[in-house]
Image (cartoon, rainbow, N blue to C red; front, side, top):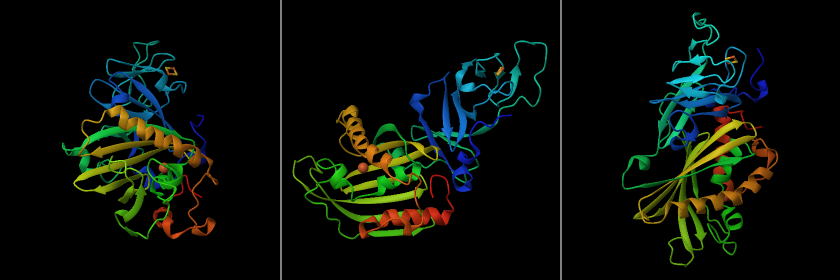
Length: 331
Ligand code: FES
Ligand code: FE
């Protein structure tokens, strides 16, 4: 049988295989629909019957057609080529050309773990030790959640994550929005790595209008990296709290999609579209920069690029990925 992806593209990393990856926002996969997803170099079909979401290998056992081209009918996924019907466990239960024949036991599609949490559909190719990464704010009714994206990048997932952790670019790439090119200085800040990931605290950034008064001032950011491709930041402006979660889906080594979810316990009257448009604008500024970076795969050897004190979160991230043995999307 022909391989559904290049062998070099399929992730060899247990750390990623046994992790959760965001596939779609739940709202973008209504009941009775099927969509294709490239995950870590594997072709999957994600589909929803009346009750549940399923994640399968996107390949009919008869002639290798993509099942995501088919349709969902009566809680079954139906191949578009000769109409084989697969039940919710991935078993072929009907071969229309031979209705009297019991489908062979081998006519069974490979299935994967899938869960819904925080408004997202999460997929794993392995067996993650815990559930999908959901921030406490996502389950706190005083927080308003604003799903943004997904944003497609022609870039590796670790490059996209590192861009999110990079504070020195705010004054240039997001000048006038998240930073100010007249105030690019970054005082030292703390970074710690332990078994739960990376924390970068007390990052002071000058922003042109952090509180909507039209006056520039310094705000403090905290970053946490909890998994190779899951991270979030918190803007410390008590009593207001603003968190921004980033989960990056690695389609293959060179292509990924980022899902960003804002959680805020204020501004409940700001129109949703206004918040999403702002995030779209920010990501549109990042995209050409990140897609231009070479090498495309993130170099984990710190000797490969030049690093400054203000890059210490990125340095900790590269070191941590190396310690985890991560290879996919890195060099
Ligand atoms: Fe799917 Fe024939 S290829 S039914
Ligand atoms: Fe940015």
